[in-house]
Length: 156
Image (cartoon, rainbow, N blue to C red; front, side):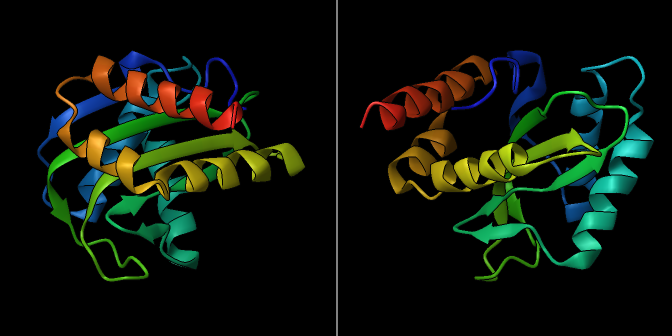
């Protein structure tokens, strides 16, 4: 369901300490910028912030799914951050966000990218997965939990 290189362990952070929505978006931008040499964290942050101004990407249940279209990206890229303490994010349920998955897609994103976004939203709608992600100890644990969910969900 998800592209093979959508997310890697180098773009996953566990037990992250940030104190604001802005700093969370900056952290996600830094992780994504490391994926390709032509990307800068400042450009990605600006694009994520631009999208947030259209409306919060806080899905509720402590989850945020910030996303943006970026011309320099050929394939979708993701990054995931597990926070020690939730931060205000203007989510639809007003709960602080403690789990965030950022997604970059090509400027020419099509229906496949909308399906990818919908698939991520579905994944994070799973209460058991959210609980496991909150208790994950390391980036490897967190990545394994997401991949296990994807495998299980695709065989249902």
